[in-house]
Image (cartoon, rainbow, N blue to C red; front, side, top):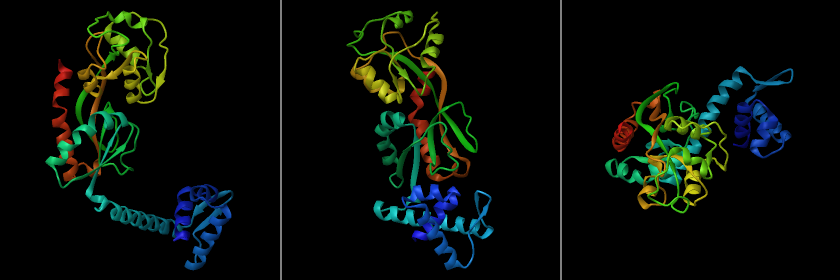
Length: 295
């Protein structure tokens, strides 16, 4: 088994040093494992062309089968731990903040409607290659530019400038131009967020946006709730915070960001029964958000 794992890793990297680093052993250890496997099989699996390591024709075919068998062993082991088969689960991808703030509180409704469908939720980004990943369906923000995928529009995104009551008292209504009077929080994932909001509000602003930067919307929203500054966030992600009064909209209603959320599936999985069920459920859950985008 050690020799097979060493071979599969070396075949992926085509580099014994990188394979050794991944396996946590020495390069000579990888070489010995490969030599042992080649002696056992009675044929070479690798050739060297100058400094490059390449698989022989036999090695390529063997690597494909070894990878498949090792993946199957891993899947069987996970099945034992979970108590159900991996391929019986629906792998749902979502951006971390969407998964934590919007999707997770609603999943119980899907589970009650489809009690036989097991769910796994995993983080993804707009750049995730769904075709090569294990994800069956993902909630992604973008402009429907995913290749080899089927995308169903869910709702246009609306964003707003939010503040905590400790920074600006609830009930205060300020002109959009007044945003410069307060500390500004930024999102590294949306570096043009402030400029887009300024343009949507028709504000004449020629300065620079400066302030603390956060990697996820969840961090950004929490920083705003703490009173650190103003933040631009998608309003559907902060509905509970608005309802509790932890945040409010002192600069007026939300504006369209220009992007849309989609339910996206790899083409080869788009017609799976569980994928269609989850897609239809998402479409139902986001009905109010589609309506709000028209208001």
